[in-house]
Length: 296
Image (cartoon, rainbow, N blue to C red; front, side, top):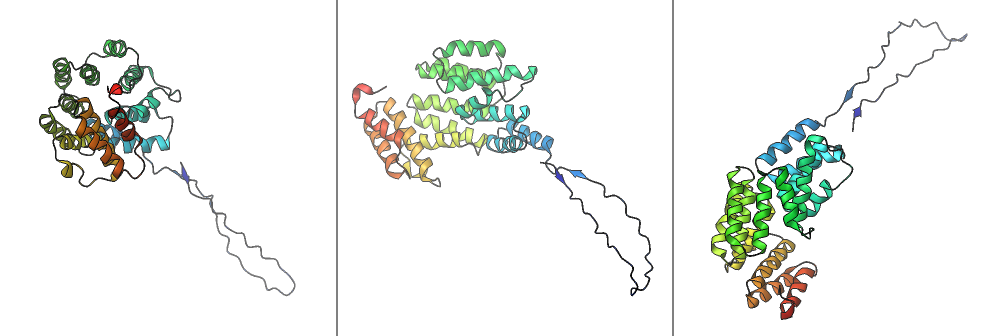
């Protein structure tokens, strides 16, 4: 919002003469019109530049803060919209990313439309919105075959099928682009985690956290790896209960996929126990665990 200095109207004192009032000499005063000064303490360009700088350095939480400031100031800012969408993808907040890239309120310039389309594709793949994600991924690769996020998405699809070596090859290709290293290393850790190689996964998550210390996604995965490695106490240190319950639920789901049913049941029960509200996901997963025919 533009702050304007208020106009101050100088009161005019009217002196009226009457028979009993002595004559008063009034020295004329020159009154100049007040100049209206427009000032705007919000420097949109600086905020956008700061957001870009944070994003480039993989400080995604800080980047999102800056882009959010800019969107609050100008909800139609395409620069802030693109930045926020890309940051949501990096933070694993795919529904939020899709809300940005699928919105019709942004008048995307021609030179940004490819990035917006790739953003839509990535958000859709990671949130399981496509019946045929391979086709969507192919479309993205046709736009930019060197985008490391698309190689990460390809690795993710291989991981879902248990094609571990193919997934690793995709992650190596993503790393070779030299961009977005923390996300790729996190995904390599997740691949190892899904294989049950918990002790090998932990250093990957720790490396991702070192590269982007305030990204909860990486820290949650690090803690999940600690839980599955048997270090429950250290994994739940210094975090609030609702976040701890989410991590326990996710760890329980991985254990269930690895057919470690006893561990999975304990983790789901612990998630329900410590959650400040009823943990619906953990309850549903526990019910699935207790009904063998429903297991994934």
